[in-house]
Image (cartoon, rainbow, N blue to C red):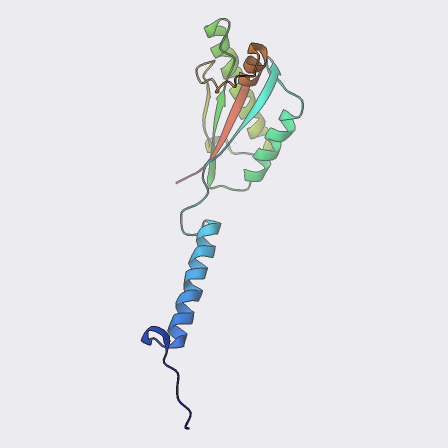
Length: 156
């Protein structure tokens, strides 16, 4: 019996099928790295304060670590939002939250982030509370609200 050629799947030459598979794999790989403009989702992290403008233990280092990830990335900008608890004088809370935001903004500039990459630095007082779990005491809950949120976003 003479050698017979097996039919190609879908009637397409093998090199076209393999090339298409390789191209699709390259597109998936490139998009996972952000090369096609999809980029990363904004990364947001909260850094707690113990009292006033004193970071809770370990939070200063954690904030510096997040900032360090993005220092060389000129395509990343930042929003800094200061928060306080929801009890007490709301005007004083607003002032304290702005002071916290300004503190972190200055820390970022001192670390080497260009000031024009910090898109906003605002204090919202107790105006953006976190959800409260049923097992939290009021004191624990209020302590968790004293924070600064840093959000890293891709610049256009």
